[in-house]
Amino acid sequence: MTKILKKIYIGLIFLFLYAPMFTLIVLSFNKSKSRAKWGGFTFQWYGKLFGNSMVMQALINTLLIAFLSALIACVIGTIASLAINKMGIVMKSTLMGVTNIPMLNADIVTGISLMLLFLFFRFKFGFTTILLSHITFNIPYVILSVLPRIKKMNSSNYEAALDLGATPVYAFFKVILPDIWPGLLSGFLMAFTMSLDDFIITHFTKGPGVDTLSTKIYAQVKKGIDPEMYALSTLIFLSVLVLLILVNTLPAGNKKKKEID
Amino acid sequence: MKSNKFVKMLSIPYVLWAVAFIIIPLLMVFYYGFSNKEGKFTFTNILSIFQAVHFKSLYLALLLALISTVICILLAYPLALILSSMKGKNDHLIVFIFILPMWMNFLLRTLAWQTLLENDGVINNVLQFLHLPTLHIINTPAAIVFGMIYNFLPFMVLPLYNVINKIDQNTINAARDLGANYWQTLFHVIFPLSIPGIISGITMVFVPSLTTFVVSEMLGGSKILLIGNVIEQEFTQNSNWHLGSGLSIVLMIFIIISMVITSVFDKEGEGNAL
Image 1 (cartoon, helix red, strand yellow):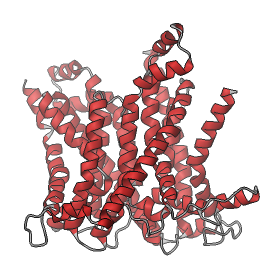
Image 2 (cartoon, chains in turn blue, green; image 1 turned 90 degrees about the vertical axis):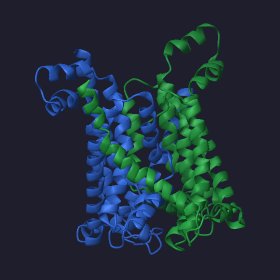
Image 3 (cartoon, helix red, strand yellow; image 1 turned 90 degrees about the horizontal axis):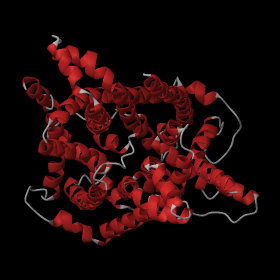
């Protein structure tokens, strides 16, 4: 009895979480442009999607910003984590405190604070200001997933490599990087996801004419959303589903390998 | 020793980045918040929170954020218990199921709820078909709470699941051996050990709920103003950065309070989900 109740409960929560996904997938096949009416089944929005240059440009911007900001955050964050690991308690807790600010602070405050910075120093609002902002809120995710890995790492391996004549950079790539790789990868994915899903910070730091999918959708909310957007998000959802299944089978494989070792 | 010094120097790029893009921007919020258009020091922007419109929006935001946080705990706690009781094979799968919706754009997900909740929307059509009373919650505070719970529930489930999953099965077995029944074990053993997860979940749900302007704009019509909406309008429509910054400082006071509470209860960072 309780087993059935448990399953019903999980089922209801998943229905709640996934109901909007199904709605959007259904809307992507809706012939009518209105969200309230079902006008018959069609594939036309999928066809029109690739011809809609505004949506495609927003998609390219979104993916480019997510990829670049996650990549740069990984470089800065990993280098910083190596240093934080060797720091004294005062320096370390100060720097970690600062690192926590973008994660714990409200997005709206992070957004306006960056907007004020860019206004004050007369930055040209556009792709660069969005990228700088995304790197800023992505670095904490990288540090928080890489730092525990570095702490667990055996530092004598690295010292041994140096004693045997490796340069620090060579030793980093051959000794440290393989050790912290899983943490770095999950940091990258987390950062990429956060950047992709961000609207609020992009809203305050974007310039006219440069849009990500989020800001494009926000601009369309009042006038009515292009159904191509539903088609696009269905495609993204399905490809991520496949990708995440692949990614989630990888760590399981690593664990097994370790157990054998 | 030499290599240690070299390694510490590696923090320089990040320290510079953090000063330029975290510290200085925050100081600028404080500068604008405590000054007027002539650049003179003033408390006017901060004190304007006591104007009826602003105070009402802050009060409503606090109230709705509180309600949605409480409902999130009530929904997430049993779920985390059930999920951890099935532990073993599907650790990754569970995290994956909760992160997956984040890849479908946040605005589209919220918009989909608008379609579902509308007076002649999908849910009401189903209810009508079943001859049940229909829901009229779109454009009310109830719809905003609904949207907050939907968007931020995963941030409550994940830390709770992490903490409960880490509880040593032997501790639970010991309680049972000593004669505690299921509910006694739950209240006296599992619940106290899961407090770091609850606290971390509370901040992760409360802060975004308190400060959102998107959920309230999409599901609340444009008539219900939360403090987030007021701040957003000051920046994007009225271009009154001084007032917007002043209200943001007030908002930050509430965020800092919840940060302090987190750091007191969650010293080890055990509740960190991500």
